[in-house]
Image (cartoon, rainbow, N blue to C red):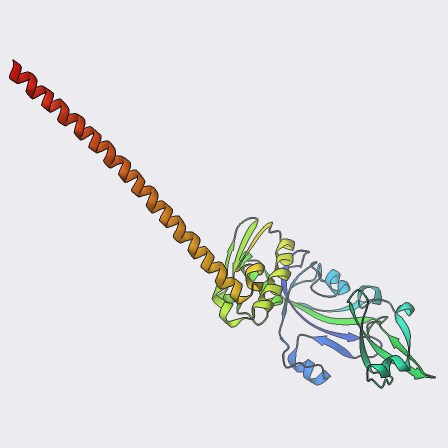
Length: 295
C-alpha cells in the first residue's frame, strides 16, 4: 500500500464538476472533455504530473491528495473558500452604457468583458444586467461560491530524481520532449540542459518555462539550479547574441595573441641569456689560450 505524502511527485487523473449543477469544468480525460464540450485542440490530456503541496492544482484538491493510496479512486469535495473563492459583492461594478458605446461595444447579459486597471492589471468579467443606461458587470470567477466535486485517481508515485525533474518539465513545458533534455542531479543541485530541444521550441516559451521550473525544483529541495541556456540568454535578441559571440571570439583572440607575445618575449629573454652565456664562455676560452701561450 503506497500512500501519497506532501512533496511527492505523482501522476494524477481527475475530472472536476460543479456540485450545484453537475457541470464538468476540467478533466484530464480527452473523451470526457469532448462529451462535456470543453475539449481544446491545443489541450494536453492524460494523467498530469503534480508535486503535492506545490499548488499545481486547486488548494482544496492539493490538500486532499495527502494520504491517498496509489491506484485507488476517490471522490473529493472542495468548499468555495478552497476552490474558486467566495462571491464578493465588491467585485460587481456598475458602468454607464456610454462607456461601452465609446469602445464600440453593445453590452448584453452574459457577455464576457475585460478591463485594464490603472496598474495595468487585466480583469475578466461578465455582464449581469443592462438597464436604464447602466451596465452591471460581475468580476468574480464564474465558479466563485460553488462547491466542487473531483473524481481522482493517483496513477503513479514517481521515485527516481531524474524522472521527477522530467515530470516537472512535462507539467510546465508539455510540448517539449523531456526525454531529450539533459538532466544532471546532485544532492542539492540540478542542471537542466535544453540545448537538444532549442531548435524545436519557442525561446520565449522556454524562458517562461524555466522561470516556473525554478520554483518547482526549489520545492523539490534543490538549492542550486542551473539552466542551459539561461533565461537571460533565451531572451537576448538574436543580434545581441551574435554580437556577444563576436566579442567573446575577439576576447579569445586577444588572449591568444597576448599569450603568443608573452611566449615570444620569454623566448627572446632566453635567447639573450644563452647569447650572454656563450659570449662569456668564448672570453674564458680566449683567456685560457693566451695564458697557455705565455707559459
